[in-house]
Length: 103
Image (cartoon, rainbow, N blue to C red; front, side):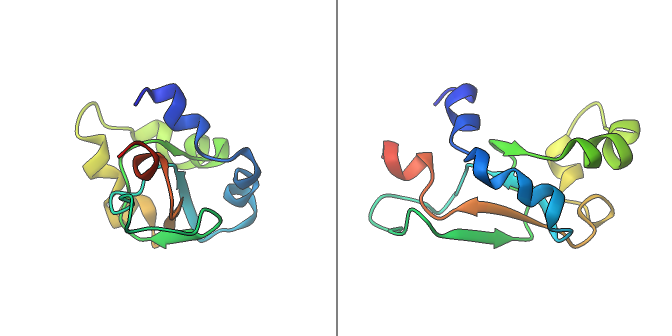
């Protein structure tokens, strides 16, 4: 799956959630457990405290005010999972993501 198709899988209608909901850290198009036959509801959103690492979107505010100045040169996915970065906020992703559609 290309990066472009993964990013387009995050519905644009969800983007305002990043600005309105202070408990949302990122939006993701990826569901590691979203395998065909295991997920059903294409309208269902799921929340997790674990940073997904693939196909995510964050707000400009979060980038500018919190992350840009301290972004690591390597292992950024592990760094994003650290409580100092997510501060208890969660990732929101669709129950049925691109992985379920391609398997």
